[in-house]
Image 1: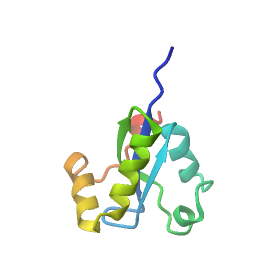
Image 2: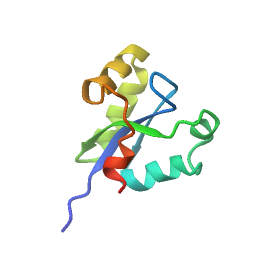
Image 3: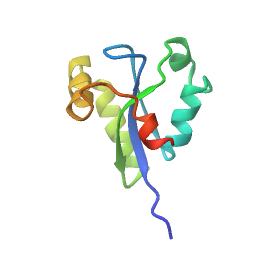
Length: 98
């Protein structure tokens, strides 16, 4: 049986731009939805399409708890989390989506 993973992720409009934090069980599909404008109105309105950070979790509960924690953080903590693993703010979609 295939192990099911859950993801907490952050999207950005550009380097140091608008940020969005979310949870999904299919990161490739969900990121594609954001990129195609099928995501939430917030991401569409602010052109938040670049996957800049993500991590995996064994359960949905873990991923949701992490998302809520990150959403409550000050912006500079979120930026530090992104830059800790992705200092150039590259769009990770090209590493996971293709």
